[in-house]
Amino acid sequence: MKSRIIRIGKSHAIRTPKPLLEQTGLNGEVEVCADGNTLIIRPAAHPRAGWEAAFKEMAARGDDALLNGDVPSLSSWDEEEWEW
Image 1 (tube, helix red, strand yellow):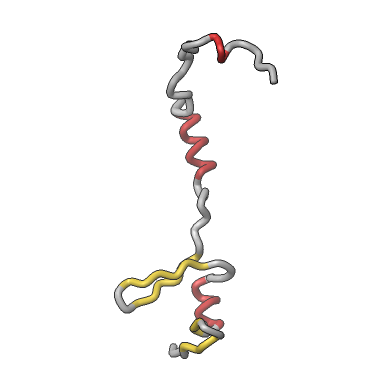
Image 2 (spheres, one colour):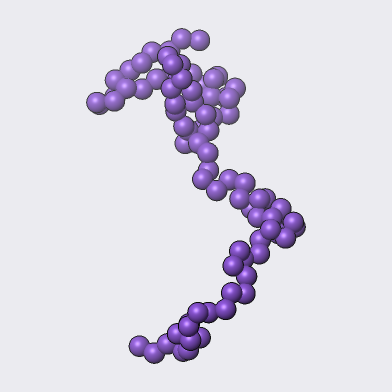
């Protein structure tokens, strides 16, 4: 399927035919990158995708404990109540 690169203001765009969008399921925000002379368009990755499952797995393995554990304070400053 052919398309044309068009000018929009100072930018350029490619009109993506509806059948291609329907076939790929792309909509909303996408990531575009170049690989040689090929443009790759894929769904935008969510920065924290998969974190919930990873945290649940860590908790199940017991890997979610604090690394420094019960380290005693080196001064009483941390223990005393602060006043402003």
